[in-house]
Length: 228
Image (cartoon, rainbow, N blue to C red; front, side, top):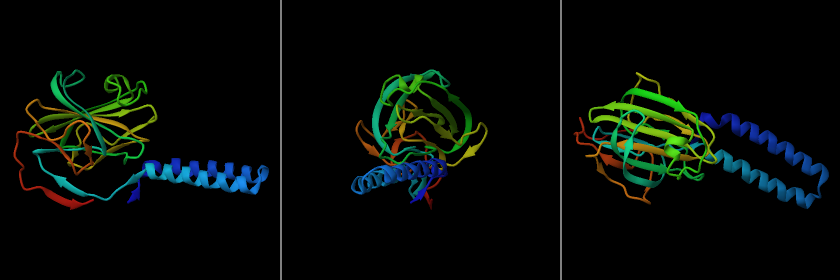
C-alpha cells in the first residue's frame, strides 16, 4: 500500500492546520480536553491519509474483458443514449465510490485515446441520475479491437477535483492508472449493446480485478498478469 502523489499537498497542509489547531487548544483549554481534541485531530488526519491510499494489485489484461476502472458499488446497469461522442445507445455501468473506497482510477481497456474532454459543472450527489451529464466530469474514449469504449469520471457532492492522465492520441495499457477523483464519487462506463454484462446492481467491485463485462472479441493471448 502506498500514498498517491495527488494527496501529498493535501496531507501536508492538513497536518499543518491540525497541528496549529492542536497548539491553540493546548494554550487555551484544560489538559484533559486538549488530549481528547488531539486524538480527534489525529484520527481526522489519518482518515485523510487513507483517502489517498493506492493498493498494489496484480494487473490483468485481456481484450475481451472490461475491468472495473474503480473500487466501489454498482449503482447503474441500464440501456441509455450516449449523446456526447458516441451518439448511440449503450449499456451504462456505473460504479459509486464512497469515502471509504480507494479513489484511484484505471483504464478499463487498452488502446488509443481518440477523445478526451473535461467538463465543468455542478456537484450533485453522485448517485443523482443527472450527475452523469451535469456534474464536473471528464469523458475519455479509448479505441479498442471491440470498438470505442467511453468512460466518465464524475465528481460528486464532496469530490471537488478530478485528475485525469488521459491525452488524445496516447496509447494506454489496460488497467494502467488513468487518474484520481479526490474524496470519492463515480465512474460510468458505456458498453456496446451486445456486451456480456458480468455485474448486477449492488455488486461490490475492485478496480483492475473485477470483470464488469465481456466484449465480442477473443483475447489475443491468455490473461497476462504483472505486478503493479
